[in-house]
View 1 (cartoon, one colour):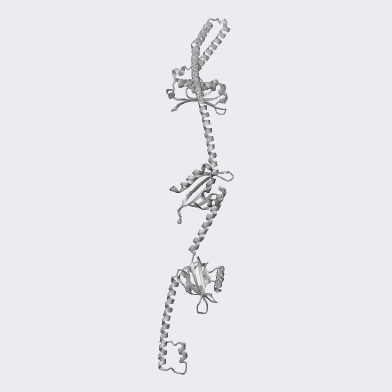
View 2 (cartoon, helix red, strand yellow):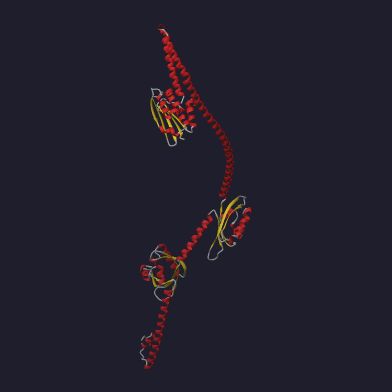
Length: 551
């Protein structure tokens, strides 16, 4: 049983109460104890309810008071949300210190101490943004509210709430940074950039004023006012394209047009816009306009250059066609002249061969026979002379020797002019005969293919024979050679004749201009569809090569 102070004071008196008085007093005390018990139960229930509220509230809540000694701030209430925000338990905060945990940096600690001092002086701390350092070292942005509370005890207490606004702050910072970056780009880019909502202009960058020569305010007041600067020839087309913008499936605008600046300068613009979906509305469009004057001027210059080039090409083509016709006419004329020259050349060669044959026959049948008869007559005269006419007999003997010499020369001349061996025996024996008649002071080498004659006609064999004859004659007369080699070989498509000596050599270009022999050699070879090559050098001698196609 608990006695109140009044009971104890009354019981301290010397006068003793009666039994009834004691019973009444005991009854009063029992009633007071019942009331006190109910009061204690009620207080316990209230304390339990307050604790439940503190633990379940969305913000961090704490109750604390300041002490003159370390850790200077003692926490009495520290709910789970505070532990979640800071990463510290109440025991860790009280053990390691309020400032050494969440406000480790000296500058931040001093700032917090000054702010709490003003709070104790009556300046409430309401939803101020602070930065705390969690136990894991990460930083969090929080909104803090704090104020003193009334209570018994040696030190005054304070109630503080803490709300984590890091995500919101970071999102706001990111949004602000993005907006600043967008504004920086939009205001420094050379292209015109705009954002429009239906018929209302939301934003246009400063490039519009530079390019259009008009204020942005005029475009905010009337979004279609930019059409006033569009070239009259393009204005209706641009207006119609703008009217069809919302009717298209993609909702895009893409046009090239000209604008006239206030000073009369004409600039080419390439403008494009496209719809942008957003949560608040669906008829926003973003557009960009670029100055493409230089590109269009370059295209125009390129078109003009191309047109000029095409005109020059047409003119040149016409000139070339005319020149081609002239060349075709000249070629036909030249072809006729060449054909005529070939016919005349062939006739000339035939005439030369016929003339040679007639001279050969004349030498052989007429002059040679006459010289033979002259020799016989000289023998007869020599036999009739008396011995006393010895001087005359010697003269006749000399005449006989001279006649024999003339006859031998005539035979050699006849053999050189004629081609009887070629006609009757063939090309290989004829070439062998030519090599046998070469001056015996010159060493000869002969390499002949017997199968060649079967592959070429008589005209081609005669041409090769004359080439060899002329080449060997030049070797004997002019080369001063000690060795000559003749080679006749037949390939799959051509027959090749070569005559090579080790003589003094000559300049083919200079000799060809004055030598009829080389010209006749070339002429005979070309008549047969072949080619003649002459190479000569003072150190290597001369090489004559004739190539004639097989039949």
